[in-house]
Image 1: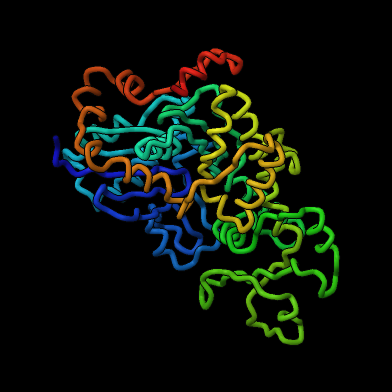
Image 2: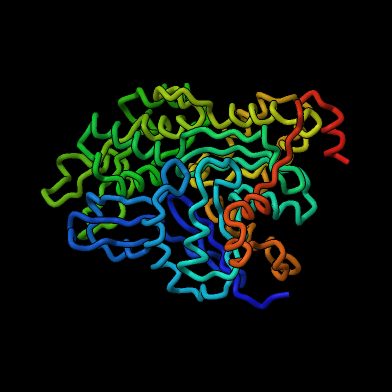
Length: 414
């Protein structure tokens, strides 16, 4: 039994979500260090970005690359700022780490947490792992997590809280790719915005939607008159009077009504739905990758036959990219067309796709789990055994010999 403070940190590549086990909602903090043209002498660490009044030409220093922590010195500087609000000495931390779903690089964060911040113990899992853990606490045995995040899309099937290893699929398309692609399109067609990552990312969030009928929307976008209900202008912020851009009807921006002080605007048409379409068809921009629905189908085909219908009955669709209007509807429509007609396909109820993993971790670590120190790796254990003890406790996979192995799948369903 323990009375130690438990800090819960979903350490995402774009934002970190942090709070304690007592909090209802986490704080969302940019996981980056920013330098601004308007204030070259200062670095804005994490949420200090809010203090930057002019966000044109921001330069980002990121601790994550392709979804993995590769710049621990940068992350340590960010954590130093964020952990000021928490008592880390002799506390416990519950931390997301993609290495515990798809091991790719050395785990460098444990040393920082134990040595620099003096945490008593740590529990690690992937964001998808926490979602599956919370589901298993509610006696939901099978869950398919589709995480459409900043760096990638990850599809991971779980049984009783453990990942089915051969069913894990990752595609290197996420919010970062979409923002960079929109910068290229707009710079080629309108004005150079290659250095305006912050503004164009907001433009993406405010303007884009997932088409439910791509061919028809392409037809509408060809019209040059009022029949084109897709064409809009995105008014760019000037950071004097306007601090976030917005969409407006093109008709409201006639030259006769504009003054010299009118804000600058970018015309958007096909870009509004062609950009999120990359999530479904990465080959549209020359990427040799599966789309998100193809990745789900591939994941299911790698799983034992008897698990597949149960997995699609509980799909957790999470990550910032799922916030595009129409994403969930398009996803489930395309997926149903690829599966057996008698399968029940259902999306789990997700209140906030961005904070869902944190909420699941918070929910899972209540009651008996919160009080069980044996689930964690202590600082003493780590000092004695190093990374080996982390792998032993937190790398938990189910491996089936083959999808035709009915015995294995029957055993898993017992």
